Image 1 (cartoon, rainbow, N blue to C red):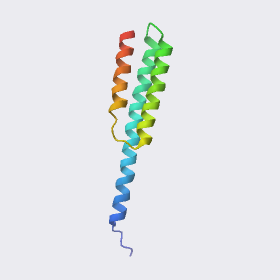
Image 2 (tube, rainbow, N blue to C red):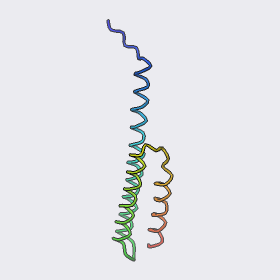
Image 3 (cartoon, rainbow, N blue to C red):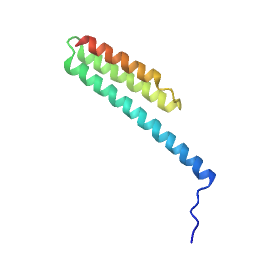
Image 4 (cartoon, rainbow, N blue to C red):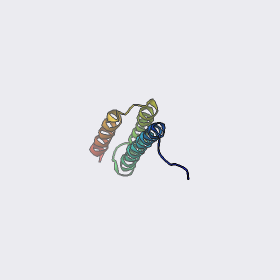
Length: 93
């Protein structure tokens, strides 16, 4: 029978893959939240809803993409911008 023991190399590769997966999930969740805030801005804002929603979503997408592809694990700029976008959207309601 074949011995199915994991070597140290296999465990390191697993940890690397899992770390990448977690970063992609975090990016996806933050991006979905940007989309939700943009939809609220477009649907309910009283002044310049399309411009605010579209601009916020585009800027949010760029920040999330740059953070994801830079390999950084610091999501605070993306989350901070998301909070700012949500507050601006809330002030327009």
